[in-house]
Structure formats: C-alpha cells, structure tokens
Length: 133
Image 1 (tube, rainbow, N blue to C red):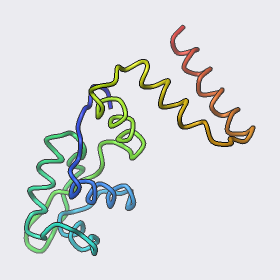
Image 2 (image 1 turned 90 degrees about the vertical axis):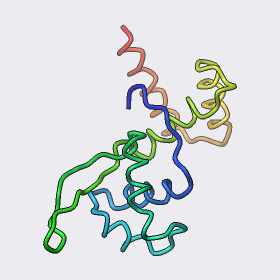
Image 3 (image 1 turned 180 degrees about the horizontal axis):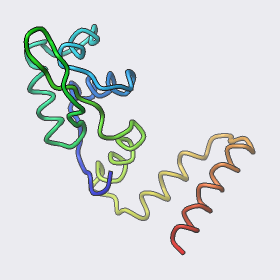
C-alpha cells in the first residue's frame, strides 16, 4: 500500500466491493455475473478493470479457461481498510497529514467505547511506538 493515492469512481467502487466480498480472484465474466445490482453496463467492465489496474486498486491474479480461450482473473490489491486509509490521508488535500490523523482518530473515538476496544487501541499504538524505536 506504500505511496498509493487513488480514488475510485462509483462504478469502480461497486466492482471493488464485490471483490472484497468474494475475497478471491474473479474473472471478467464472474464479475458481470455476480454484479446483479450494477449501475454500469456489462460491456464496460473491461474499461472499469483497466482503469482499476492503472490505479493500482486491483491486480491480475492469474488466468482461467473461459470457453476456448483463457481470461485473466483479478483480485483486490488493497483491502477495504487500506482503501479507506488512502481516502482519509490523500482524499482531502486541504488537510495536512499529521493533524488529519489525530483529528480523525479523535473524532472516531468520541462515541462510547468499551474497555476492550480501548485496550486494543492502546496495543496498536504501543506496537507503532515499538516499530519506531
């Protein structure tokens, strides 16, 4: 995920959501078949996939036989959480990196948080501190 900075269109987000939900490599025809409530046309799937490849959102995972030919299979190159972080860090150019992270985390934890969640957050922060040493 290092140095990735991209935003997905609404249609690309639909395809990416499908890939995250399936959690396996998908062929073009599987993407069309599994996208029952798509807002894009079947014929434009190759445009979406090429755009997502160029952005680094997905990767070619292999090849599968489809009829007489072979077709590529695609998988997500980033997790849903990694994409959300990319959007938080780079999707708001008016915010500087360090204050944005602290402001975002502070806003997210204003809700009532149980002790177990706080302990997990503290463990994450401690692990980051240890990595920096």
